[in-house]
Length: 459
Image (cartoon, helix red, strand yellow):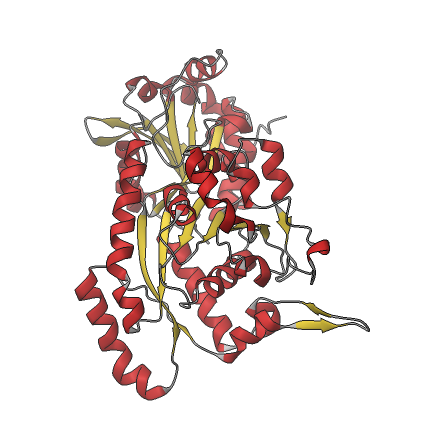
């Protein structure tokens, strides 16, 4: 039941404006159930607080009917002056092609209409007075028509082309990030596992996918506890299973809980079988698309999907780059790694062509991540800055802000083990569980912050 009163004094911050006013009162009062609105929607580098629309009308398509049946809501801190945020709301209305926007700080509520590229204020009231204006608000933004349309049987919809939409028609908050370089030994596995741990500690739900037949990430996340083939519990449930057939049951079967970090991170493991099965998958011709379709069954369960890749130009690397929204290129910035960058660029161009054919935008390259970089002071002060500048200038790829230095502790994390009376059992840990106050832990925390900012993941 919707409360008839709203006390703005209950809202002490922006989060409480969202939860106590918009979610608990305003949306139910307007007649919307939770399945008809979407919270925290990525829009470029920004994040839209609430997006309300019928799933039958996709605002990212050319069908202009959505214009009449969509609106957005932006929440601000109770102490914020709403005048400062009108231009931001106008941008959302224009880019999303929606007609109405609500702007509120829990004390004041305004409605703006998108008219010829301008945000025109058509209504405002104090939030405690909202209950007596609900009918007027419904009429202004044609709520009854929107709800009526949303209850109609779904009609056929053209293929969705915006990467933030899932197969269910809902906006997916999920970000898929591939970590790739065609040279080995640049720290890909270390980056994937500890970045996953850092993001998990920031409250994000993480899935790690190992697409490398060497299965280093599978080992580093603690899933290989067997020492002989007869104890192999991954052989029949690994990444291969979801590259051959689309099945929601199959992908649920292969997802495993890790124990290398607190909180847990979900893993889709790899297996040495990938090496011998690659030719068969290439002949089957659709492994990338099957893999992508399988991810759609579970992607809404995660904030971030991190994909580790093989150091090659093979099918598995291509699959990762076709599926991913973003790409990180780890490099120790040494000559051999740098010489591989032209091949990386050509590979990106090739996979972008594949993406174009299936209606996806080019992969967003976040940049080269300096990793396994020597940390002795003379190198860091005198050599590293010039090397970073030369790489950026010569290869035309941005260098990321964070730098992951080579330290013994990162190897110790992976090599950690437990002794029993009869055996030595691998027990790898994330750097945060192994030494949370170490410089390496702080570097990965910084990397997580950078990724969240660049990918629009919020706080």
